[in-house]
Image 1 (cartoon, rainbow, N blue to C red):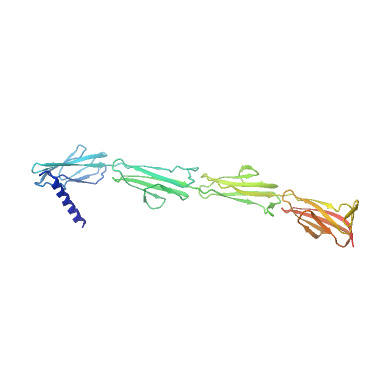
Image 2 (image 1 turned 135 degrees about the vertical axis):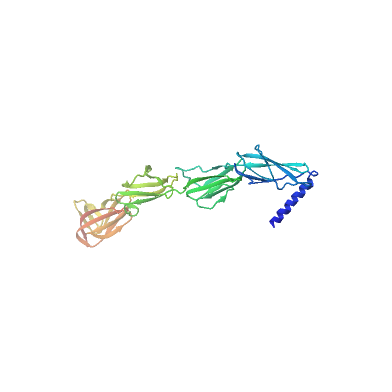
Length: 384
């Protein structure tokens, strides 16, 4: 079917040319192959489409545009240099009538120019810290661009028509090429490193805390990780002072503010992490305020003595203070027997038990870090 259409088209062209021919003037026409030849490539010129209405063609003269001339209905010619050559065919029929037609032949052996834009790293050490936009441009002054194609890593080749965006983190290779109509190819590749995820830093303390407090010096260790570009530096700010992390940090007594973060080699900065390191090594301050040495009658002090005599019930009052973690509770003992636990100020216990003889009063105060302190006093108690 295609051959029939081609034949019909050729007849139509011949008839059309015959209709416009000036009397018996022949009609010149030719084809050439390949359409976009290279330097020193054999080009076949074919004048078989030429015809004469009232006679026959007796001469085909070719002017190849480079100073060379050829003869015959089908001839071959090659060009030693690139360029656009004006090829003319002159035909002569047996009636001494002639006709000439000229066509341009472009000889191109040079690949297109090829360049890209937008691939400059915006991070450190050659890393990108955001998605990358790549634009490709190719030009060919002779045969022109036929296609531009690209592929990302091991993906499939795609036709380039608009900017390429590389969104995924990691190490990538973008391959691309431009081909002109003569089949010349210029190819290139870009290596990209993309990392826009900051490092992650973990915080460890070598002791166990009680209600968030440590009762001895602690060692703090920071571990940072970055899966792509790698960790560059780790920093910490303790009590407002910036330090570069160089290993285990010893932290002593106090309620310390502690901020830590890391940077990676691509230039990403981790969001600051905040913690508090609370160390209280000191026990509470504890003091009995009543009864003090002297004679007490139903809670009322009658006189001072070098020892304490209690007759009837009495209120045992103490003052407990802790400047760091704070007092959690105070225990009241009689002869090592726990009688009362008070967890609110003022710390006090009403001793109203039947007893007679020498008794040991012991008070123990505890802070939130687990430290404790005790005071003891022996008294003569009479309560019957």
